[in-house]
Length: 228
Image (tube, rainbow, N blue to C red; front, side, top):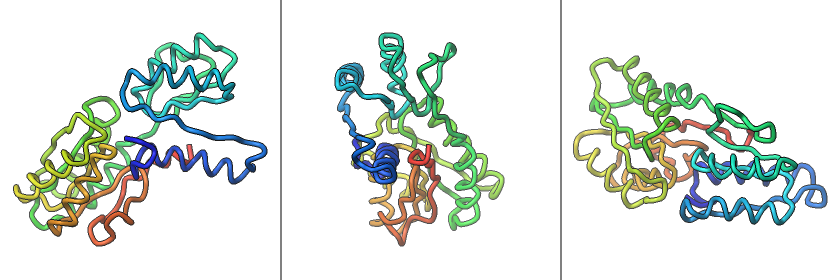
């Protein structure tokens, strides 16, 4: 999704920028490499190794294999990995894990109380352990607040396609979903655009996304990756 995705990656980069600001540029140097496709994960990690980086952070579970391989090849370097761990955890890899179902549950409660049509939507990025937690938490919270309501669920199979997110949201709006929660990186930006154009409500993810549509975003399931 890129470092300016207004979501997952941007939050992680904001954390590193905070470190630089707190300790000073003369003490800490931070940088990022963007991967446009999965095949770039290993080369990008190798590049950071060659640049003698002390700590390399894999932002997202899709980097699990690349980080594991590098941790074995370079035991003297520290690694961190967001949203994934291993059955046999390497000693030089710190996994940063989150109870996404908990924050998503709270957004589901809010959606259940605020919906005027008794229909809401969830847009997921890619099917898997992490997004399943958002999905399950949101639907559980909604059901607790509104047992008679209905949640439409659709996966985009992408974290980058904003146009697809907008298209999915538009269809959900046509089917009477008046609030949509997206856990899909940049795909969710498209869903927020649809909410603005159609006068509907949206729920942000990962960081406070209210600034993207102050009249439409009612809350955000904040992950606080920057803090981690």
